[in-house]
Picture 1: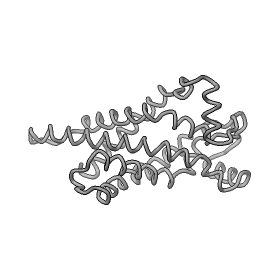
Picture 2: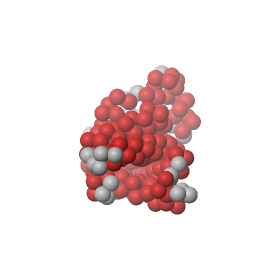
Picture 3: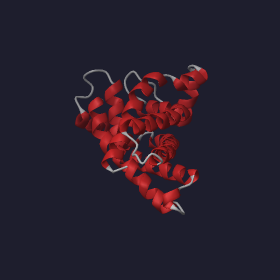
Picture 4: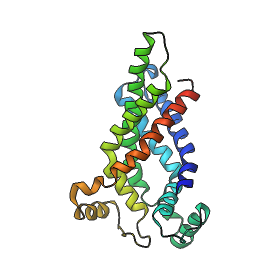
Length: 219
């Protein structure tokens, strides 16, 4: 599933960042001095748009990662198999839950990151300097940590719905059924299963994405 992750990360990240800037321009009374609420709404909308565009690749990534060897030979085969056996709608299974999960995540992540960058930018401006890459990386890691801790249960439900019905995986009737079965399997702790490894994977990737975008866009 890593090849799918590599394939989807570029369009997903670029759509999210560009949409965030555009949404701030449209929504904010003063785009140069957005309020926290305006940033949250803009970030949530940007995350929802990016997720909707690349969602079939999310389904493909999850299935390639959790399926037994030999079921899918690659990205194209996985997509074709899902459409042939389950219909085109299966490529968007769990999209609603995914958007519900990604909106608060993206909203918190982009809002905290932009606020941190404003603070760091002001600090360096007093010294007539520009924030370096380490500062931008730190902002990205802190904002992603906040977002992940607050929204991880929704992400877990989304991932389980994406894999629902696969050989060896539990079939869920929908988000509510998934929440019910997850709670029955371990209570609140079950909703944070896999948080540590996920943070080790996501935080460096997210902070690097922020740093690269900031560098290429000129800050």
